Image 1 (cartoon, helix red, strand yellow):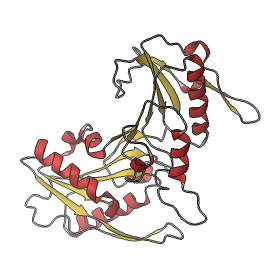
Image 2: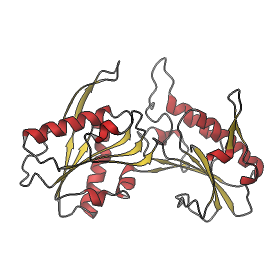
Image 3: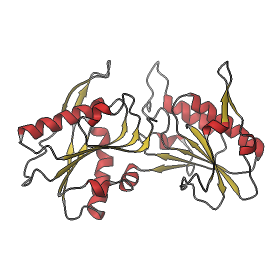
Image 4: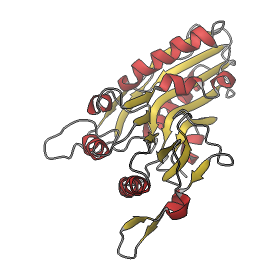
Length: 298
């Protein structure tokens, strides 16, 4: 379900507990219809109710460009029900997150979506781990709340993944700042007594075709006395087709064979947003665990 609604008390925080048994949760299939000519219409009807203490929370799990139209239609319906009722907006994955720069002859996708959303009178907007810092500068101060990757990661199953030696892998330069924040939080909270390390990957890409030409990691298993008690956690914000992570998996396996490392080394791929546009099967050939905060594959 891509665009959903929670009707709640004004006293509830925007970081809601999505308990559909106790919340007034209205799902996508109850809110919208699509006409034969392709137009989307919000038909919330009796599902949308409010009183003096009501607050609306729109949840937008964008799966296609249709969902921005759904968002606009739902917003219009809510304002017709009650023009004064506050509306919050939760967008786990902000659309066009990777189209975050202006290129001659190409649309500036992130700016386009931000401009559309800024036309709405939204009380507050929450976004999970945007791809870059560019998004934060597109909204007025105090409107946009960003849940950082480090906080989302620390809420995951990370305590179950660590071993006496745990290696965090930053896939490329774009992941360095965030993974160093994660390293600091782990060292202060759950990894005080283990050998926690970071390694930084390097890749070269053909930007015309998008194909990865080569990938390399520093030596993973240097100065480790017991190479059979290791966890390797690859961390990034988005997994889409997964080509980068397959190359990382191949490089980890190459180094394991070169160093006679046991096959039971735990390999985890954790991302904030899991698009998995080419499925998970190939990734599971290289990783024991695929983890993400926001699974967009369903």
